[in-house]
Image 1: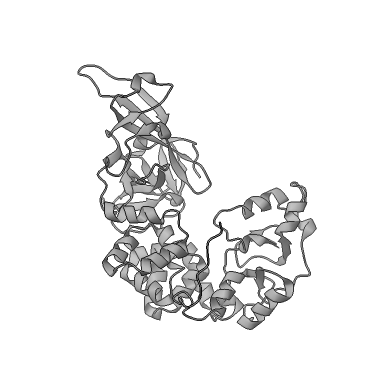
Image 2: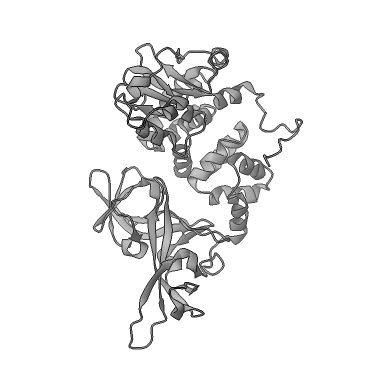
Length: 428
């Protein structure tokens, strides 16, 4: 994501923040990380940026495309102007972590054993395409009068004392509840949230980051979705909708008052709102209304290795990763001419350097945007699929329907709330 592999967070303070066209947006004032009540590697959530108007806002780390010695560059200039407010579980590096007393247990630094040292900086690094983590901690002994002390950089695992209680983080009761949710699936968190008292439920919703809240919101019944969304500020609601899958965002906006939906769409980044607007043009019980506009799409000259790399995206559902769609450029939906698809099993059998153009399945029929729910269901059953392409009359790929969206519409309207069926036991 960035042009460097390791960044020391304190050195970002005061750096200019640029938009995608090089325009000045403000300056970095702090780095926001998450620290759990158990020892888990801290994750970078984003930056506190002071705009030219002197308002301080939060910029998610996913908005950052490059961190260079002179400036931080974002992938969009359309930012939420909601004033930054620290949530439970969030830690400010400059405001809370620096100068914190910790202990170091590093076999290579015996001189620091059982000695209180202070944190002078945190090193952050990209570990996956979408995540930055705290990997190193710079520490030093207490400075003695008239003397400078040596700075040591150690692995974060060897540092003890970076805990919520030591950092005096706000909202610890909620933070402990969030910790219980950390390893749970979104639907499990959604079920737990529905059982909370209203006050605590609102506290948890306010404390969840936008992506996690988006995942949980998608698993709630329709009435609960709208209730929780409308309790958010307009700016935050738009941020959460941007983090949702376009088809789920369209489903949620489709049940709102049209005026309320338009206000939220107008606040969203056009890159996120445009596909949602296209989906809202279709009836919810058709392939066009069921589809996602973000399937795996590649050009004919893509190699098998490149296609498999796309399929490995951890944000993809198993159903979406089962088919790779091949089109003429552009590859963003609505695409250029749709050529066919390649099944995941076929990709796994072919040499990595082979081109997908040589293995395209051109015989698999496509769905149309107007295909009914019953027609989509028969399509999946007839061709033993869990994902299918939606193509318009001019052979543009518009998106793909997955079996989970079909089941969501086939099940009773209140299936998420029903408790009369036996619960499923988790796999041993």
